[in-house]
Image 1 (cartoon, one colour):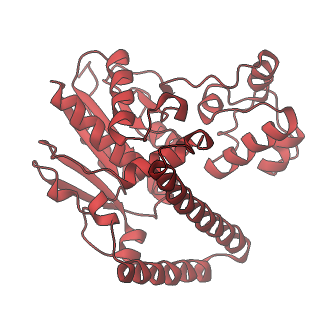
Image 2: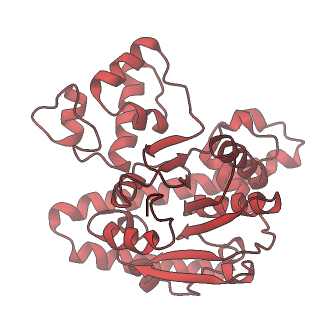
Length: 338
């Protein structure tokens, strides 16, 4: 209990209190999982935190030593009569959106497969095929509603493309702040200009924040810089390993890094349908560029862009998530009873 109290800044936490209902979010979830691993020597997947969000439930799993189990689909919002919305990857960030879409809209998060399940070299097509198999096993007949955020948005694109190529009906492909591979392949000059824009943007944000919020915001941005630096180094070393015949492959056990490598080598084939694309207003003001992040070249049915309040993350948080859900809801099916 002390672990939860410290993270959530509460004097008391009950055995059956839900971590997310107490204010737990993506950053706190990561810290909680890290502390559990250090304290008990057991690694808990993010998916497990969704299935066991209370101290009592986590204690049972620790006793059973079943934390390593990684389900292929996590029911963030399990009930409802409508066809499910399949959201690629799994973050606590999506919980507020699932709640805002209503209790009659099933919302399933699809964690990316473990590195051990992927062939070598890592391929985005293979990652998407893993999710396609999960979707078809969960919901054998379409129409399918597919979504993804950031890197998961690009995976969602390939998932929808594969489903459609195999005869599946795609009713919705929704992408949130996902850059097309072509858009991401900048020159060094463009990269430097982008870095300057990010720096100015974050300085302005910090200046507007309350002093108590400014420090955590700055720390979070520094962690992002460190993570991106490690990711870049990882990809360079991995490519070197490929050049040496893959002799370094056994050293790479990070699913996140495998997905990022797959993204960096992905060349999309055209998608015959339409993309519903969501961009955050803050990020648009910071980076500019094409509204559709370059996806218009690949979506033969066009790209419909919605700009919503917030930044890359806060667009999924209160109060911005209400408008995001309202925009997304118009593309989801009505209840079966209607």
